[in-house]
Length: 154
Image (cartoon, rainbow, N blue to C red; front, side, top):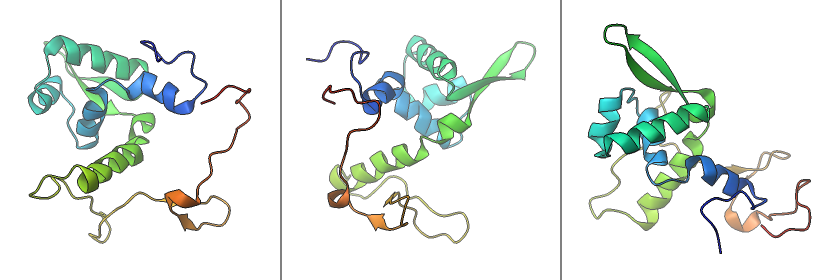
């Protein structure tokens, strides 16, 4: 049985969930990827309680996924900008979005479409072999023990 944290799990997914696994966090990351920057914008988009949003934004700043940047002096106001670490979550966020479009779809269709800025084509995430460059499907992937696995399951 899992506890409140995943500290005892020797697993990169569990470590990632410690950072982004809370129910509002990926939605805040999604909104930041969409260009929202200010506290009120996040709150309007999500309908989240102010104290919860404050806590989640602080954690994302502490974890290095967002930068808190002053945009006004009197009174001091801040906006939240994705860092390179935060932007690197785009592939995971899109994978979840595309999975939802396929398996938890609204009858009207997907709420957002991913479009390539260069040509306007649809963008999809893929699994690609780093050795041969071949695009592979889930059935062609084996999860093998890595150097940090010390006999524990995960």
